[in-house]
Image 1 (tube, rainbow, N blue to C red):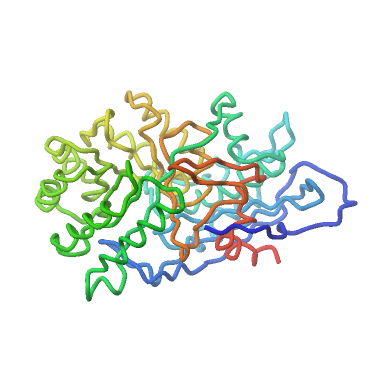
Image 2 (cartoon, rainbow, N blue to C red):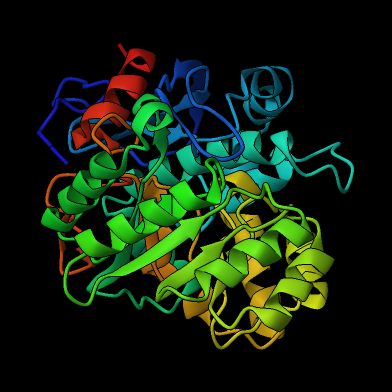
Amino acid sequence: MRSRARPRAAAVPTDWRETTALRILDIRERTVAVGASTWNAAIGFEEMTATALAVVTDAVVGGRRVVGFGLDSIGRYAHGGLLRERFIPRLLRADPAELRDPETGLIDPMRAWPIVMRGEKPGGHGERSAAVGVLDAALWDAAAKASDQPLYRLLAERFNDGAVAAAIPVYAAGGHYRARDRAQGGIEALADEVRRYRALGYRTIKIKIGGAPRDRDRARIEAALAALPAGGRLAVDANAVFDLGTARLWAEMLRGYPLAWFEEPGDPLDFALTAALAESYPGALATGENLFSAADARNLLRYGGLRPDRDLLQFDVSLSYGIAEYLRILAAVEAAGWPRDRLVPHAGHVFAAHVVAALGLGAHETAPDPGSLLAGFPAGWTVADGMLALGESRGVGFETMDGAYDALSPLVR
């Protein structure tokens, strides 16, 4: 995971007067190709795209224009049409006073959220929620930069009495199927991948299952377990492809291994499947990354049979309309008696790490494969013994991340 210093976006002359973010000047988006030759049990990533977005403000802090960046979670394709036709125009038409926090003078993403959602009917959570989420992420990046601090500090001040963990648990998500798996199973390549993540400081590693015959996946699981460090943990992810009968067959096989969790065995909205599996599978289950609203989260908690002493909830912050809706999800989770440390947001991107640190959640998912658009962390962030120490980069910190900034920088050239 390389990080290097890069010029920040949209530099301005240093003799410009410093200002706070009073107005949005422009919002720019582009579709970027993910283009990875990998797949899981449900989809391949060869044609996958994502949205990169920039919110350009009139603020100047430290002699540089404040530009807020947003970058999609991988797995839902880009949302350019929705952003251009509905959400960006609403925000640009808004009276700047509607967006401004009267106490600080800064653009407030919490005030922007209902403006973006004007005219949207309840329900229908899916592509819309991700489009709003990437726009929300860029607004929070801008807000943190305008207040001259890392995003996790701003979020903690507003929503968690200022409490921020010095380091947060982190796990490596990988173990995808690749072309060589078709011929020879890719067993040694998978073991090498696990060893690479081990060398990077990870202790919990997640791999894909369900996209190969069970005997081959059993061999992949055993190879990954053998490559783990002492005390390391392995999680497996079926990407929601099993029906109940198949899920039970796999669960019976998996219970013989010391797994950290069994992720998304079936369709995320099939709460009866999840509940039936939870009755018989003694290990931890994880789900929720493909549910995108507080209403969906409440239904999962009511009807999914999940157990707060072991199971994990993986609602993705950016795919779920952003911070405003995620706070409602968090309230629903706590009202149902679940502790915050059972929340492990899906993502792989650094924006989610800020949220985990700021709200005291359970762990951060990262995608350390160097071929990933989201690989790496901002300068000064380090992983050691399964813990991520966050640095002091202003905002989210995309500007010092190779792959992410390559996708974002054309928006401000």
